[in-house]
Length: 311
View 1: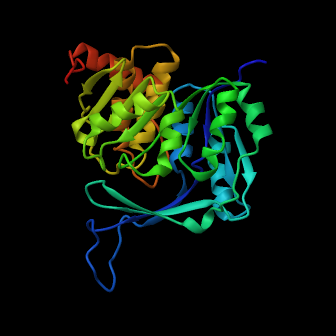
View 2: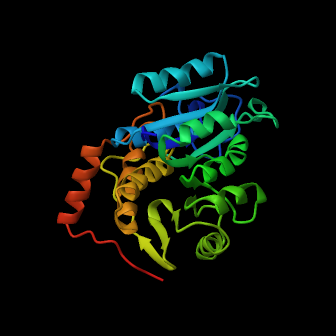
């Protein structure tokens, strides 16, 4: 069967309401006057990975449960407007939604509406098999239905990536994703010992590569048993929001990885795309283009910004 999709993205479709706050945590008060305002837009983790991959020239396809509601209309419109195929499985509980509180420094606090999911939620196996048969790779968001999709992807022979986000290294919910993926992303935010967690993932699971992002401290790459520090990249403009930076990192890393590049090169792609994402206001769903990414990579090469190696 002909390959039609480079990155099949599972899960993570939804809508965020973005609220700018004077600081985090929010000081108690009867009210706060909010600027630049409150905006609702489509775009959660899976949407951002699909959007980032597509902007980088990869053929992306997104599948998730989406409701017949105004939030679902926003999700469908985002994919339609960006030319990203979406298989929207009907959701009785409605489209996932969240409120993002964003501070002046770009940090955020996300509040997810847990009523928008049900224990019985599943992605149809037959639909997944058909999509997987036409895909090169699958990126799996850590939502409940996607855990049940992992065996189907394995049967299809796809390589799999996932992002554990702010996993603490012990919560059992994340383990099926961590141990079933060939490429694992996560944040160091909640990790007491990032290296130990990264090596544990690689030792117990299928991961050939584990990447832990550390914000302004850069990232850590574990590949072939060697841990490497990847320096942070200076954002090209002021930082306004960190939302979507990890998704941008993953999409750009996948661009290099699917092209067969060295993992360190892939991580450099990711660092540049993540830095760019921090300059995009949370009210927008935009991603760095392939031409812009490659131009910044070339510029950093010319400046001699080599990737540093550490223990």
